[in-house]
Figure 1: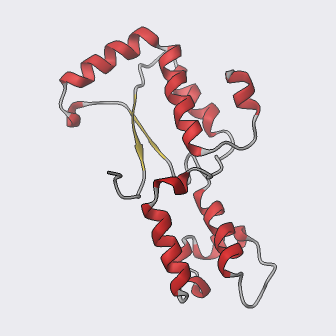
Figure 2: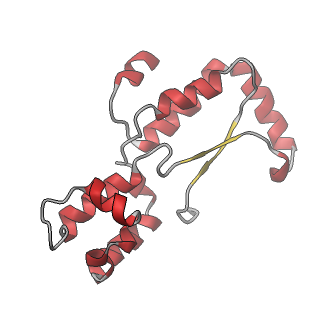
Length: 157
């Protein structure tokens, strides 16, 4: 149920996207169907609606990546107990971290993660993201349609 779902502290990204689609369709059943039919007859550039950013908006991608990189390729050589948050605050992106950007295996891992759609499967959600999106979609003062998810990952085949 939606109530059970909203009580969870951590979600996986794909189930979130699935839940949002189901929630949108169940809450706005007829209007969504009508808008979907209308969208099929319009050109892509004419579709208006909400596009949700995945990384660092819905999912805590950096936190997950940095924790995995620490586990797989090691932490700060000068501070073995350094937190992922501290490294994120200093370097923002994993490819900027000196001890990983100089490690060919770490760089290869990052490249694989960017290209593999399964890499999104275990990303934790940012707390409150599901509730925020539901509030937007349930707004009675607007007819918001979810039309896209945004990511910097390459398009899948």
